[in-house]
Image (cartoon, rainbow, N blue to C red; front, top):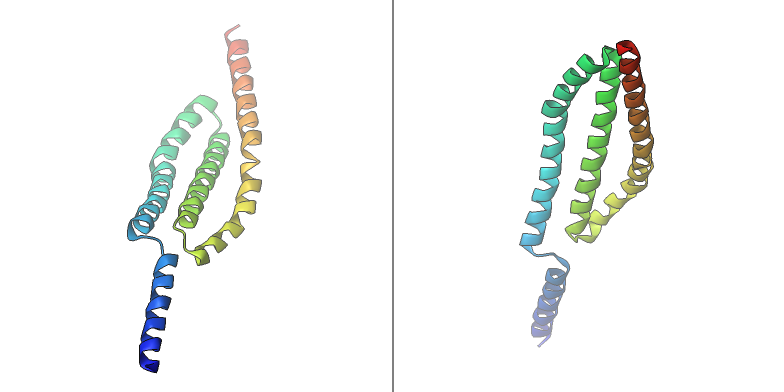
Length: 137
């Protein structure tokens, strides 16, 4: 009789553990989503941003400015990727993975810089436009 109670108790524990685990499709979709964020960031930084740098170097006529622009854009890409990866990892639903949320405040602080970067880029664009108009006149 004690053995039967032990077996019933262990199956109850197994059922409770199974209820805590998310379904395989939830895990698979979120892991694939996180990998897609990483792959997208890699493609953007390795293939797209060098083309942006080449165009910016031609337009700006200052190589250091083009390098700084691409560096800032790569930081924005990495921030977006990190935010997406963290969201996907947390969405898996395993309680131990929720500790990755500790990184969110740092990412939010850096994301707060994005409007400043945008304003600086708009200012650079206005200065370049004024310089071109002044050179034509």
